[in-house]
Image 1 (cartoon, helix red, strand yellow):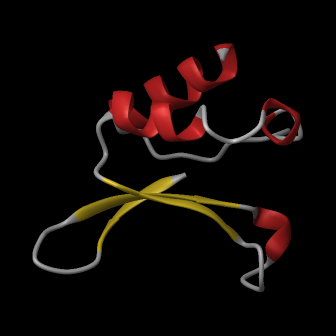
Image 2 (cartoon, rainbow, N blue to C red):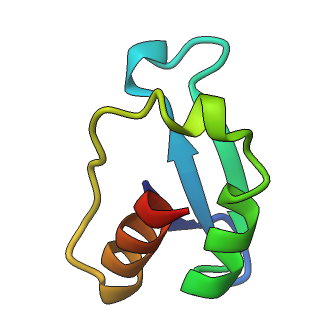
Length: 75
């Protein structure tokens, strides 16, 4: 999970599947913005069965990323 700016300062949060190794299926979600509430709402749309397959989360020290990881673990 990381944020990136693609153009004109627009920020996106990108969720990736490390096992995808850059191939098809690597990008799980690309979410406009970095607000925790927005990202969590999108993550909640992913079926619980698929979310429960997550075994590891890699993120930077940005507070919003930690909150997303913590809150998404509880949904």
